[in-house]
Image 1 (tube, one colour):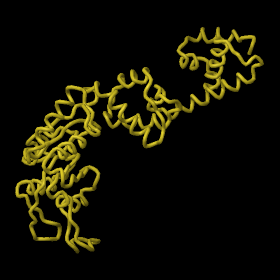
Image 2 (image 1 turned 180 degrees about the vertical axis):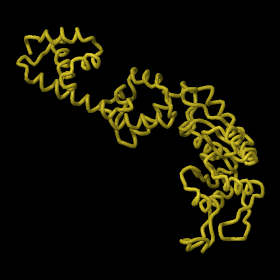
Image 3 (image 1 turned 45 degrees about the vertical axis):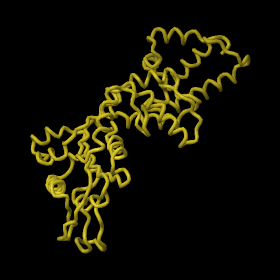
Image 4 (image 1 turned 180 degrees about the horizontal axis):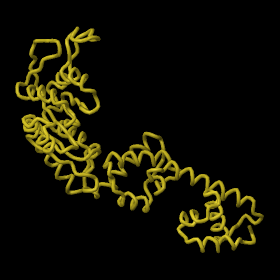
Length: 323
């Protein structure tokens, strides 16, 4: 199942998407929960796109990204002269979302005083700009999202219980990527195509080993981490297919090591009169290269190569005559 940037083959995500489609037709507020990076804003945009409000604005605000002293004016707008620097009147995001959807991400980070003002807006469907006495009617749908446990925040008095109930009319939990492993490879392929196009690179796909690597990762950062990892891999890839080393979190280091290794072996081959080396010759050269990277430290080199120290000493003592 694919809809824009939404790719769903796992039962867990299909269930969340099905619920989102059902609630889209209503006017009820929605609370989207889930870990960071799971795609809560994607679900919010999906609800808006499937709703009767889809011809109007979808306005998004990350409540954690704006200082508290600026957040109120961003939400409510202000009148000319309301504060120093307010040279002209300005509509806030609540007004900009008129007829459409206001998405409040990281709602748990909203200051407690602003929580009270937002509650009043949801109850009265009217707003007042800073520095004004005029009440302005608004018609918006609010979708809020958080990665925190709002029930716990209510219990610890960090979040208003009455606002929680206003926002939590319908709750949708977005599963982590660990709970939707059927979607990992389809998502990876989607991101690969996307970033190959953006970067004008002809990447044909992922190797079987790279696919297996993706399936084994824990993805603590969820879909956002996967997208970031694929973008980096596309940029750094040296071949037509993404390899395991391209996907490693330290891919730039691995890629550089790969290039250095290739250069080292190429130089050694060029120094060899026959230009054709046996497998034993190449193994010997790679051991010497690994030893040079570790400044001659044999114990560390043995660990890096996955062999014991005695095996390393034995191989170093068997330098091939062609070299």
